[in-house]
Image (cartoon, rainbow, N blue to C red; front, side, top):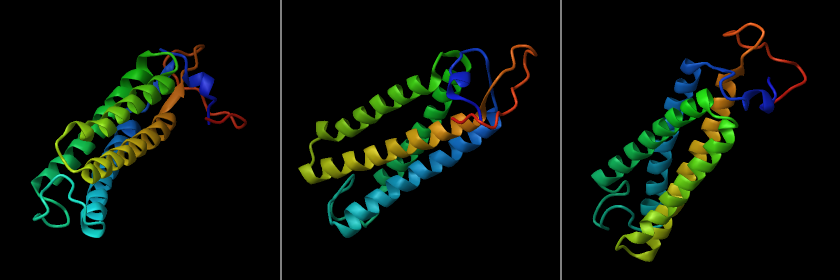
Length: 167
């Protein structure tokens, strides 16, 4: 493991892109499944219509599929953001946390701008918060495992992990 201060130096980090993007794809799958689970629980167990009229089944209608795909797309967009931040900013994880947390706040507030029953708005916001928290926490871990400080004495070579340091 490497110390966080080693990774927070912009321009001196080697990013294992394959590892980062594999984690990003896995995170996208988690985000989509979290939406499906949230809709199923909200509609099927609690009987609260989210994203579709009451006449739709427990998974809603085609809007649910779009919602799940948007969550997956958002996770992939967050992966691209993290990759960019790792390559060029000081303290990339701090910026990533702030940007994605603010995006999560926007996603949580968005249902309240729509004409729908209050319960539907609340549970859609809860689903959005859960998905956002999952994306933030998973990608933060993925990013830390994919980034390694570069040994400045040998440009282009990642430093070996030190035993006593952790992220």
